[in-house]
Each structure stands twice: as structure tokens, then as C-alpha cells.
Image (cartoon, rainbow, N blue to C red):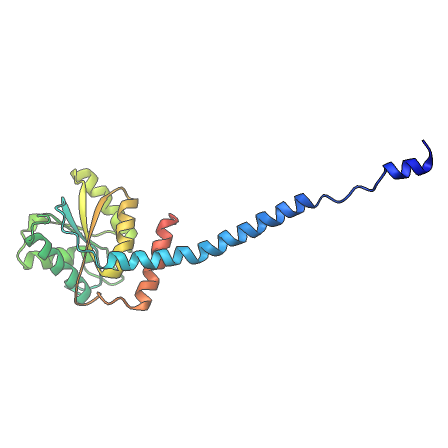
Length: 214
């Protein structure tokens, strides 16, 4: 074969751009997914907080769980007193005859949030045997984990969670995370019921943590 013929048949190998393009497309797609999730997840969390804030589910359940709040050496804070009054209202409405109060001790406390709640409900007319005090947990997750253990031992299958409106979504998600069949009845008015931006943001962030199983 003559030299000119060889030159006609030979051509330099062109760079393979297809692989580079595929890698670039994958990178762009990944960036887009991350961007969408960065926006979508917080929006979904905020939406869930608002959705569950207005829920007052009065389905009959085996027990009403009152989530703890501050107490002052046996005197409920206004927020805790409001939750307890709502739980008593649910008992009167026939939602359940059994109430479980939760919440542990803070530094310097002589009694727990749970025991304070029980004593308040008994003083308000419930029979002592109707109320179980679980003085465990420094936060909602720890308290509901204790509830999950006791209801399993007691054969309780369904619960109604009583808490503030902004807290309802996270409390329900945590209860279901611990295997409970959970309903929610949020306090409707009074201390703790305002959907302030700070409260909503904090609860939305907490809800995302639950979704991520953190």
C-alpha cells in the first residue's frame, strides 16, 4: 500500500466525549435532586406541622397520653395545666378512661412532670387508678419510648396523644416510630397553642429528624 493510500485510510482517534457527557449529566441530575430535596423536605415538614396542629381526633382509644411540660415543685405550668384540662375533657367525652402522664425531672425538682400531672388530674376529679404516671424522659422521644414499653406490658394497643398544636406532628411521628397506634388531639386554646414562627420552625426541624430516624 502506498503512503498516500495509508494516509487516506488512517485518521486520528477522536476523544470520547460521550463518557464525559454522561458523567456531567449525572452530576447535574444529582445537584438538582439535592436542590429539590433541600427545599421540598422543609416545606413538607412545615406543612405537616400545620396540618396536624388543628387535629382533634376523638376516636375511642385505650389510653390518653399527656405529654409533659414544665412544673414548679408540684404546680403545673400554664402549658401543662392546659394539656391536663384537655385530657380531662377527652375522658369526659368518652375517648378513654385511662390517662398516662409523662415527663421526668429537671435539675432541682422534688417531683416529676408526670407525677404533677397525675396529682392535678386526681385533684380535678379523676380516680387515682385511672392515671398512670411515667416519670421518665427529658424530651418527647424519651418519654414516648417509655410509653411504648408500658403499653406493651399493659396490653394497650391505641393511644391518643395530647399536646400543643405545633408539637402534634412530631409527637405523632415519634409515637408511630415506637410502634404505637397513635391518634392526636391537640389543645385548641390557651397557653402553648400559638403557632409562632419560632415554635413552627423548631418543630419542623424536629420532625425532619424523626423522618431521618436520628
